[in-house]
Image (spheres, rainbow, N blue to C red):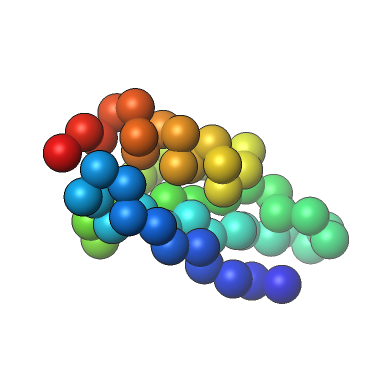
Length: 58
């Protein structure tokens, strides 16, 4: 399932989207903060949101 998860963290709009490479599980998660893509891949949606909470304070 290819679903984007969106949350507001510290006033920032954060989204996490799974990226599949042929398997049943996501190969990695792509993230955006305030409509700007983060270049690093993440292992899970939770990791995206933790990163956003710790590195993008309002």
